[in-house]
Length: 179
Image (tube, rainbow, N blue to C red; front, top):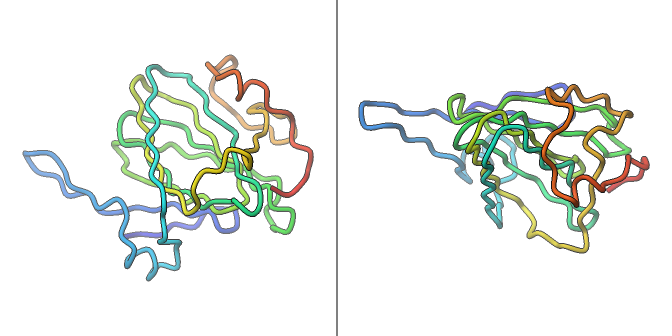
């Protein structure tokens, strides 16, 4: 496993070897021992799969409020997405900054999103499937979100009018508070 630091404090790209041959491929997506040895959260308690039918579907920008915050290990297992996070931890040296990375079945990368980040993604292909492990069970009453195109963050989305759920379309601009 390879741990790659990003410009945002605590945000890590994870690469695990992919073994390919004529039959296909094999990849260990998550291993508690390897993650613990790399200083990464290993106690995932829930795994989610999101499937998407077409390009330009945007899901986000979501987070869980204290004390239900979660670390997320996000990977695209079919197709490709633009994965975007915003550091909304007031005590962080990278507070208010965002980071974007393409995750795809082809590049086999994962993004470890720490507690205190808002997270979302845009599908770049049809039939994109996103798998993510979380360290805290989802708590509906602790859900929060930020408008995907909040001008405060100036995220360079490659689409002007993505397909959004009603809930995602209604998130407010960021109020500056800690999640």
